[in-house]
Image (cartoon, rainbow, N blue to C red; front, side, top):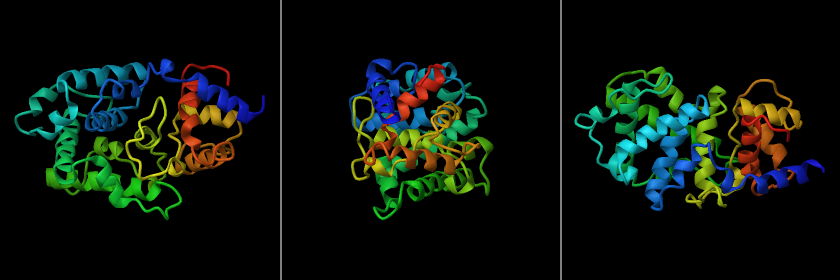
Amino acid sequence: MNLKQKLDYHYKAFDKSQISPDPLQFLHLYKDERDIEAVGFISSVFAYGNVKQIINTLEKIFNAFGNSPHKFIFNFNGTTDASIMRGFKHRFYTERDIVNFFITLNSVYHEYGLLKNLFYNFYSPEDENIKNALSGFSNHFVESVKNITGKKNVSQGIRFMFPLPERGSACKRMNLFLRWMIRKDDLDFGLWNKIPASKLIIPVDTHVARVCKSLNLTLRKNVNWQMAEEITNNLKKYDPHDPVKYDFAICHIGMRKLIF
């Protein structure tokens, strides 16, 4: 098989039946688009570390949030509801980071209604890809945290939550969230339909980087934004309209140490 045949084979093989373990599984527990968006954003923000740790953290969060995560966040009060977050940590996110994250998310929902409305403010159809919009979106959250805390700088945890491509970050977790929201198939939801899937950038972590290096989809050594763009542009040779559709298969083949 040539590479396109292999990519298409694995894309079909890694369907919804293969979803677990993956933070994406939590989005499929909800029907309301507001909940899917909220759960997707939260799941992506916490999607670092080993997958078992990620799943455990997200189960803890969503169990605390009840039937409607969006409603919980919309009504979140940083003073009275902070106690619900007591003891919540995830690697180097502190309890305070997590509380500040939800306070900020609450303010965004009150001002914009949905995260997609905020993101659309930064998106231009003339842009080559979603880099500029992602940067504006992340910066908005960082500045909002500064306003909430009254501090000139944000913590390491908050800075990690909202990475910036211009600083070289591959922005894996943010690109993952955008994949879930923009692409549409059995796995991804296509809720943000003003942005074509061709504008997405593949979410690159060590697993994706390793597989893509072995397939000669990138010649770069370091996982960064340039590598993510290079892999995406090479995948466009096989599907110019939806290059990131291969991400889930590539990632899980890497995670499970399978042969591509």
